[in-house]
Length: 141
Image 1 (cartoon, rainbow, N blue to C red):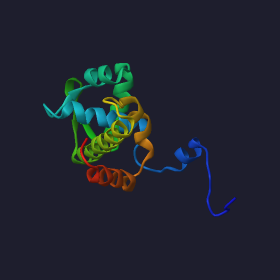
Image 2: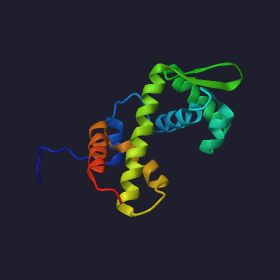
Image 3: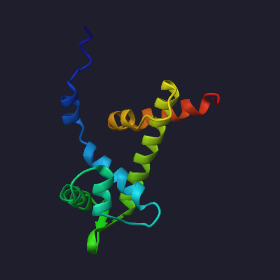
């Protein structure tokens, strides 16, 4: 076995990842981006409903995202993205779209949401861009 490569369990790779967002934070930020597209803001209650979590859980995550500079939490539970949050969220939506397109293409299906949600946190920016370029080079079906 090649001793130059270091193998870990999934938990080991997760612990080694020192990125600013956890997978849960990414899920929440991605949904906040979806919900704020039309009106510029969303509410804790809408976020909780869309993610099928309790409002208290959504509120706690909003506080974490706010402390990270990704959003502002205004009166009456209104959440607005900061510039940092908008940029990070735009990438999360792009990554989701690229991976979903790939999975739909290779599986010949119209819906790959669950697979996309499970996989999207574990691919890096380079891989996402390469998948996008690959898909753009394929003939249309």
